[in-house]
Image (tube, rainbow, N blue to C red; front, side, top):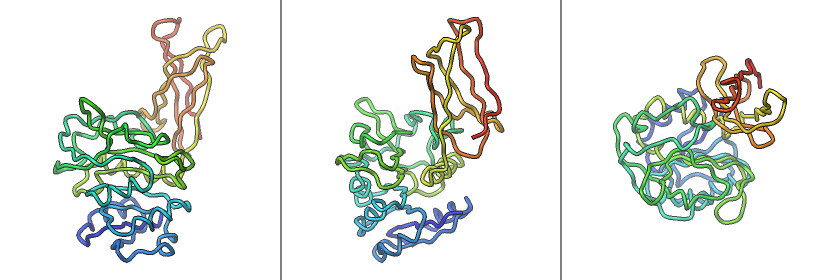
Length: 276
């Protein structure tokens, strides 16, 4: 159980507090114009929904190791994402959920083949950023397709990676724009739960090597599955030395399949019950 501060400019967003509590966390709902640095440094995670006036306080906390999830609902909270170095362009409002797509299977989007159209039970618009405006250390996870650029609605930024202004992130951070809305779907809540685990670094690296029948390293498609549920966790390709690695959540078991669909005597090889 984590101690989480949800920061908003409105007292009406108790629904998001209920979501975090339903995931088993201790939550305080704070109005943004009254927050202080010393106060926020007592929390394990900061979540900003519609934050207005104290962006510099949140940035100071992130710089000193407190992870943050930034949800964008208006131009003021968008500037928090820019102030944190996630992006350097202005936001875009998007609502055509037919073009929503996960960009990759990751720690946060694993077990979620699709969001089920919009991440809301009552679809509406949300804020996004052009993928070209993202920090070099960021990793885009979900976007709305556009003919000129993908517009990101979810991205992750690891501690120590480079931000948009040449500095580094002081803690793991998530951009998850749809948290500013009500009526989240089950898949959206699952993504949030995964994001919280990412922020707390509850993950490790699963690595291995793919070789052919003569024990020579080869580059092949590799998929990692959850041992308990059978759900796909990661899709990767081994390099020319046969090596692969992927981030997975700690304390779970997985099985790995290497595919050789066109070249070898076997269609696939499985390694079962890998505990990490």
